Image 1 (tube, rainbow, N blue to C red):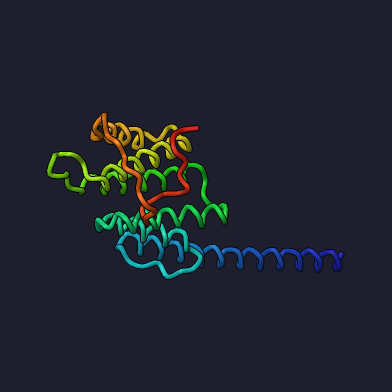
Image 2: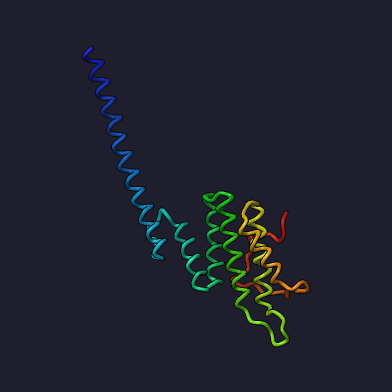
Length: 183
């Protein structure tokens, strides 16, 4: 009997120790997540390497908010590439990234000037076309994404019906990993 009590007490002690260690680890993770959330709210920098994808997303978001659309699109594209390699994003998260790419391209097209003859500049046309592709990709991944549907309809309203897109050389704004059209 005494032997059984010692074994039982040892098992309970091990389980208690495992529980305390698990609680301490969870508390540590929670504190890290709170620090990352605070940095995101304040526009600060995320220094924790465990949150590299979140850091890249925040960089892209704040670049877009600062009207630096070209770099925002590049960062979102890099985020998609690294997420593809790591397999860390769900369909909905990927759709949200494509939606953000479309938003930045749409805004980039809106700030472009028109030519003296009243036509859109080629950069605006190109940004609009790439924005449409990004919105369509977002909708392919998450058809219920109402904001992407709305922005795509807005984009269609802004684009002239007879718009011809000139061929462009490779640039930083090209999204080579975006398929053209819906499958």
